[in-house]
Length: 155
Ligand SMILES: [Zn+2]
Image 1 (cartoon, rainbow, N blue to C red):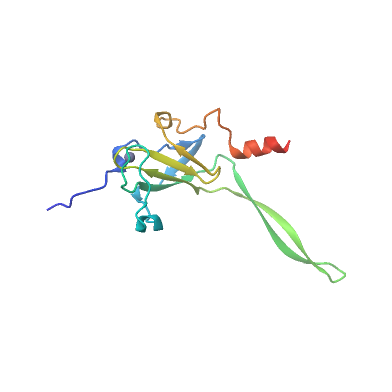
Image 2: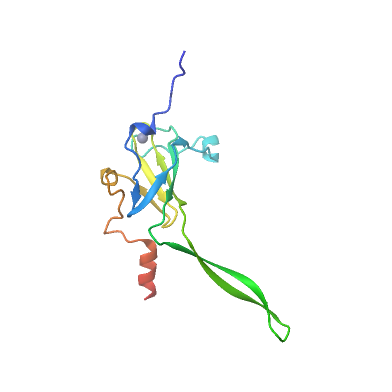
């Protein structure tokens, strides 16, 4: 006897974008969404796409650095001056960037409604047909990255 599978399958919808604003993204497998206290209080959110209260599936995505991207790290090292005082002098190092988890995707198994939270920009995106193609997901030209907006305000 096979067990009735109550949850819809996120894999029956298109694979998540393999690129995000040009950078390569690799996604972990879909898994059951973590339970939160909202589940225990019976007020879990419903899907914006179809209205089901079944929990969505969840996957993390890692952004792979572009060619030559480095991470700057500064550590402090003690330096003892000839007159006896010890100072902490900064040493900056540049190491090749590695892939880091930057995205959290949730997908409704019933209708395929998919949202991606970008840890870098702190934005939540609802994916549509334009995100599922060979060039991946691209930021709309009408919506600037929050860091770019902040830089404009500073000038
Ligand atoms: Zn849905």
